[in-house]
Image 1 (spheres, rainbow, N blue to C red):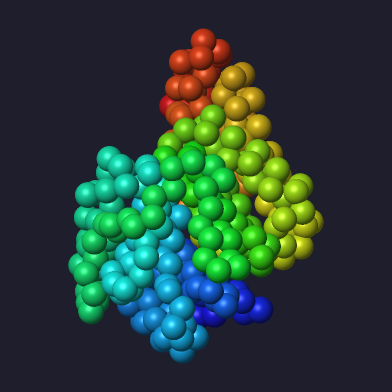
Image 2: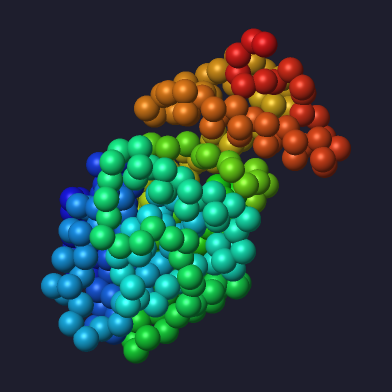
Length: 287
């Protein structure tokens, strides 16, 4: 369903995981990010694009290659696809397709388009790389940390940051790639926010943020969790680790596993750097 519609920007949100899909329509192009998730939801996005597209080219951005973000891509075969160099080279791409197909089998879902790993037409190789079509400019940034293949997209004329699986209003960081890289991505987000270029932040899960205070709150939400987690891992502070785990929204076995994985990632990177990452940190519970 549509949860945000203003000017050139329309944001759809899936019933599952509050996953967002963004459509931006300018005089020069239509940009679609991460069409998802259920077939009826993808079909709604398709109908919307058909109604507004006209003769404009359709660009399809994958913010990263997790299965829930690529599952609807096959519904737009005439699009020009965009993704990072690491999305193209992602080692677990076959596993992501397997997860997508297993998701459909588990819930008896049938789709009228193929579920495949995206073939990328425009590869983002470096920070600041630009797509210019007429008077529309989209600037891309490589943002590893959550996954190795993340990308930010800033639609300059609209002041929009499409952030993928960062800066949700409620999700804490899920570090599947690298703690150090995640910290750098949050610092980049802060620089973009401080530049005054961003008037609307659209995360991959949750709702858009369209005022500076809320955008900064989300950056600080991630930063505070990461700072606290590193300090607790360094000192083996079990109480702090448990308290940080309790900050996750929609607490479940899944969020507990993600928090434990975050701890392991930080400990591994601290130990590799010759710093303290105490073994007894665990997952925030006594072993």
